[in-house]
Length: 133
Image (tube, rainbow, N blue to C red; front, side, top):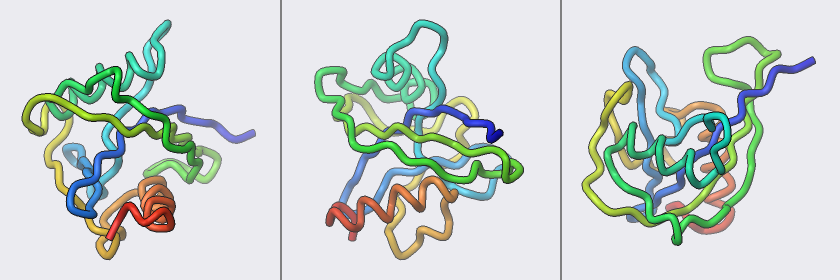
């Protein structure tokens, strides 16, 4: 029986590159977002997590479902998969790493090896849909 980590992720693309975040003491970048707390909707959890991690306010009315992906969870054994439910959204404020986030960057498709397996799956999908350069 595989263990599933259920996460929400924000897809934000600028100049053909995907906004990605790297936690303190981690090597790989991943999609900003996180897990729901009890009773939260996807939108509420995403707004809260992005505020905590990247200091910006997502605009709830702009949140649009993109796609859901499953991949091997980064740093976990092969019995653990991560489910990434991805959304596009506009935001207010300045992007700035906060809480456990050490660094944020816009990563091009050519540099996808800097990212977690889940992020790479998402980047492949975005590339197929001509959203990444």
